Image 1: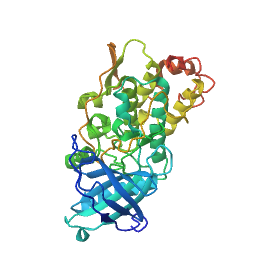
Image 2 (image 1 turned 60 degrees about the vertical axis):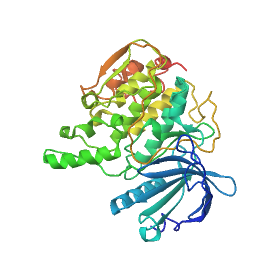
Image 3 (image 1 turned 180 degrees about the vertical axis):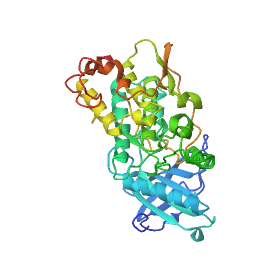
Image 4 (image 1 turned 135 degrees about the vertical axis):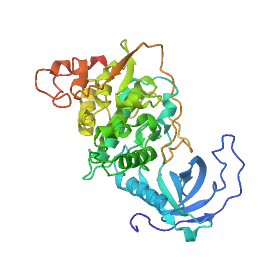
Length: 406
């Protein structure tokens, strides 16, 4: 593990206790003010950002004024230690593209070196000081142009994971795991649930084996984002990267209507892909075919991440949206302590309400139609021409993408 953990860390200087903040976070933890050496990088802990059973997340600053996020993970047994090592490993290996939070350094101490008898891990990453996407959504509706930029960044991060020689599945794609940089770009964080494993249930699987798989999924996924193949293993669908595609469908729905398509996490509704879209035309109606194509109950009917990214790029091209630009029309604070997302899936917070009084049309995708059919009216001109909705649409789609208003 020498290439993963540069060196053991130490708490160099303990600051005087700081009084408790009113929200229980901020400058309230005894370690705030402490200087920590993480693999040769000395940082001072500035404030507590998040805490839970997984550990703690702090904002930190080095002597040059550079800001970081520092996650402290504690493990009392081998299983927890292995999980911490996997998270740090994926964070380091996946760093590189601009749409993923960047790894900086990591360090560890074994349980014999700590006073509390548990192994301790530190993960140092860049700090996304623009704050969580959820905060922006709670302020009001987002323009279609900004939705394109946000959704493309999230999809690009997933593409980087799925395109590896051995694809990596995030397993916990959700609004809370998307953060803004100080200049308005979206990044994906939290790789504590990531895996390269793919499960392929078949008729030879007994009830115990299926039950153990369901328990594994419950530990690493968030209820309302779980794909149908996770909730009903008796359909014998493979459980792998396509579950991230389903979660992206939930994200796109959420971006448009500021509520989740499966807010109640109802198992039968998710298994049958029954969700509700507004009946009347909205500024987001052009996204409906994409949402429907992603929220297919059969994972084989969902587009690949490459197909999805191609589609977004081509639509943005016709709408003259520059996907390389930051989200516009939003003031981003260069704050020292934005919210940061915990490593383990949590009970999700209540979503902001659907804006306005839209009448909503139930959608039933349980027919397992192909993703091409899910493209709907936006790609109507391509029917009969033998073209996939995700390929070669540049010259054909200009007339129909006008349903997306920016």
